[in-house]
Amino acid sequence: MKVTVFGGGREVGRSGFEIRGESTKVILDYGVMIREDRPVFPLSTHARDLDGLIITHAHLDHSGGAPIFYVTENPRVFMTSTTKELTDILIKDLLHLSSYFLPYEALELRTMIERNEDIGNTARIGNAEVEFYNSGHIPGSINVLLRLDGKKVWYSGDFNTIDTVLLRAGVVPDTEMDFAIIESTYATVDHPPREESEKRLIEVLNDVVEGGGLALIPAFSVGRSQEILCVLQKHNFKYSIAIDGMSRVATKLIASAPETVRNPELLKKAMSRAKWVAGQKDRDKVLNKPGVVITSSGMLTGGASVYYMEKIRNRSRDCVVLVSFQIPGTPGRVLLDEGVYGPPGEKRKVKCRVEWIDFSSHCGKTELMKVVKSLKGNPKILCVHGEPISCTSFAEQIRQETGLEAYAPSLGDSFTI
Ligand SMILES: [Zn+2]
Ligand SMILES: [Zn+2]
Image (tube, rainbow, N blue to C red; front, side):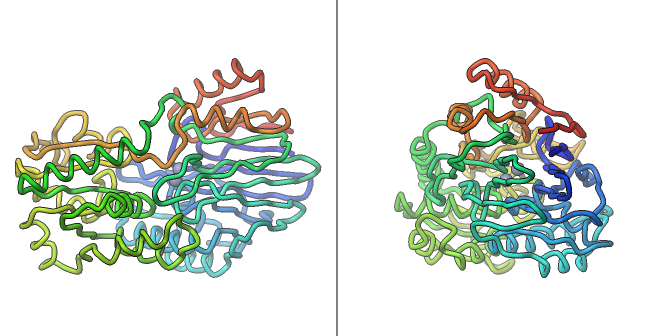
């Protein structure tokens, strides 16, 4: 059996892996990385001899390239029903907003969505027996154990092994394995305890609102927006909460699949007391009253969060509370590092307050090592989906602490098992 890295080797943004057995070919994830003005896809491969495509979760860095396979062929595809629904809205949004060329259109997306076989616990794809486990990352997310030609491969996808307010912790398959492909997003840092982040968020928000200000929380539409809503409800946050942009659509969709969240009642309560921003009038109201607004995108790259940011940037009583990882080069990261915001060449110091609070949905350094040490068998390990330094130092740490073979592969690298 051969595993090839199509994307996600020493990078985050276009995960894609090919598993090729004697007579079976499976692709695990096929994402898209949005680089400034152009999309970057994983390495290309024929759809003709593809037995199936598995998408671990809806984030575009795992799903956004997949419709390419439907331009000429119609391969089998496996997503949980929640991932299917969320992928549909996220890719539609990408198609709608893209000013650049995408190599597929709405038709290919629709073909893929219609072709999907909703994931249960197992599936047979060609000669591969596949098992799926909760990965604790976003609603609908799974990790994958694949048995093929007498070997077992585990792919973590994006993975979180601690309970959050929104989701139950991810599960590692309890079986001997030969090969493991593991994400490395936070392989060099630990997250603060979750309770601490929650408390800090409530403190900051109380402070801003009691000072007469508006707190803008830019959050990923899928996962983070619902997590923040639930955190505010859990702590009985008593001031006005508005929700806008794609976050609204994703929240309604997730609430309609209560089995994907840890406490559906809490989410329902949070939703019923939030104000659902429906148009410009509502936005004006939100902007002119103390309170909180949760909206996508999480890194201020587009969507309603950009609209609010423009309005509050010079208002010293207001605050932008970043709660997502800020990829270097994004407006959110530049704001955080330099305190400036605006179009390229016209960035100016902002007067509003800027905060960043860690609400990650990925394992931190300690949890990742725990996962590795819990794996049964003596699997060879690929450290992927991370900045180069995260992947290489994770592989080094695994070699030193466990004696397992571990690599930080580059794009195009193949491994034979
Ligand atoms: Zn993800
Ligand atoms: Zn990812």
